[in-house]
Image (cartoon, rainbow, N blue to C red; front, side):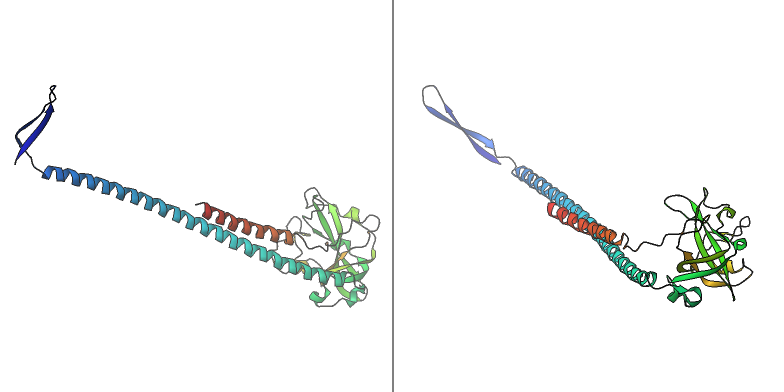
Length: 287
């Protein structure tokens, strides 16, 4: 396609001279293609930017969801553990009420202790009879103030009663918590002392008696104990609490009547839950 070329020139004399001549307009489709290419590149660039932003937003949202799930799950577990500690605190208080009602109640003769162990547990009792040191039991791995040791479990024979009652006479230091020379801890043949009734554990596991130390036990398994004595034994035992006679082992101290660490543990777990939720809220606001 032809076109007219108009050229304007200013000469030194101040006269404007215009020169015209033939020319060619050229193919306009190449300009359109160039413009289309620019539009396509710009659109593609915008699409890539949009895709990147969408990808970033999706990643941030995924990260928020994961952290939210973890924080809420941790808070839920912490709250559950906090309420569990509160339930244990309530159980401890009920147990303390039972201990107080029985530990500070009047002392009863051993023959008047209820046969039902649930009613006899923690009752104060007066123990009278004769020690049978030949059939003594060693309760192993008993710690006291950070020191290893054992407890001496001695049967008491009573006049007019074939059933013996085991008594925990006290604690003795033992370097390995297993072996001890019991003969040096004798405190006379007869006994007239007071203590509180304790029950045998009913749930295992119970270790089998050692072949080298058949009269040493980790836990007082009544069924295994019954096989060691030539006479029947009561379905409970007594922990002596009065002062030992000369030569006897120091007595076992009664369990303290406190609430234990359950309240502090509950506060700790609830604090963990609050920190978890608070941290999640701060994270979501900042992102």
